[in-house]
Image (cartoon, rainbow, N blue to C red; front, side, top):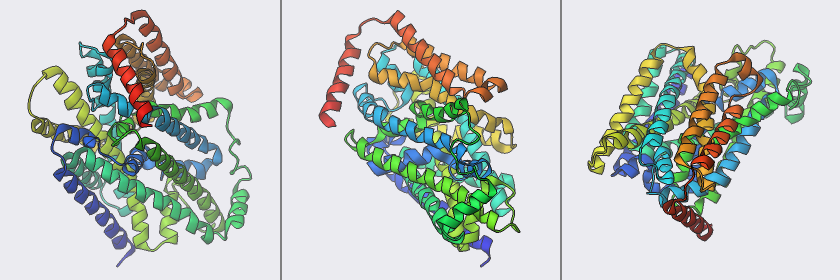
Length: 494
């Protein structure tokens, strides 16, 4: 078999596994809670790895190694900020959100939780937050599809559109039929695959470059400051990089995992697994880049045209073609796990938060599950149409969509969990302030290059939510009762 045939075989096996998991999950899905939230039945390991895989996407295996390879360890501050943010998210949001969403009308989406928690009868907050999710995630999904098409084009020489259709068809199939369970189970497998690949490449690579000491000397020969965390960084730049961690509090496709775990007791174990996975995976990505610097310094006859392909290149150099194919599958896993997670959240926003809120239909659960599947297909087709022509503006939007979600939802999620006096008017004002600030700041090159837009967006959203809430607060016995019940259950179950 040729090298390409070995690699293609590994990709086919991986995709077949995804479809089998989708079929298995389809058989276990019987109602809307199952389809949108897995029946709140996820174990700690599945919750942790599915949250991680949904989060990292191709940035973990391509973007981060490429930045470290090109510019050195100063680029690792984003990884440090993300790790801190993820840990705080698991610590402060996960257990409380798991309990509160069940206490407050057994909410299964973020918008429905906000509406129920704040006892808003007009549906304005739910519809507004559902529209924000629908808008941003449609473009997010589209950008993931673009990445999949480019992956097959660069790895196997396939036509971009052929690769786009393959990735879209497989991801949509298991998401559409298996719902949240399929997304979570496939994310777990994909997270495991990403983890193993990121650990294997640098470990074997260090032996290829002559051991740890020789590797470090080769890196220093390229650039003496390449291993420094502070070389080439400024205070404001460091703040901007670390501030990425703020985004975690408001990412719907990540925090929805907290709502799905089987019990609040398991959030502690899930946190340990998730943060352990994240630290080791980020370390592996950084180490892969550094080993790549050493390897290409030792082999000047070789060139790496695109620094973001250093993970792929090393995998193909040091492993058997079939194993290298598994490494390629890991990149595909990173892309597909994020697409599927965003699809299911977008579907839930469209059906649970827009259709049911506006139409107010009393159809049976099976009908809503069917509508959920139609919604997945609908959003996928729109995203595919947008992705059909490679458009840089889509990828540019994704660069500040993380900040948009983080600023619009992050402060509101934290306030609803920890401050009983937040009002629906305050939450709406905070969401609008955060989203608008990010869009204005992020589309201004001078402002965004000076400071990452999530910082002003998060701060202004927090201020707006608190000020308006204090102006509009009126005691509500039902809100107080749910808040106290959440406190009681947290103390009992921890």
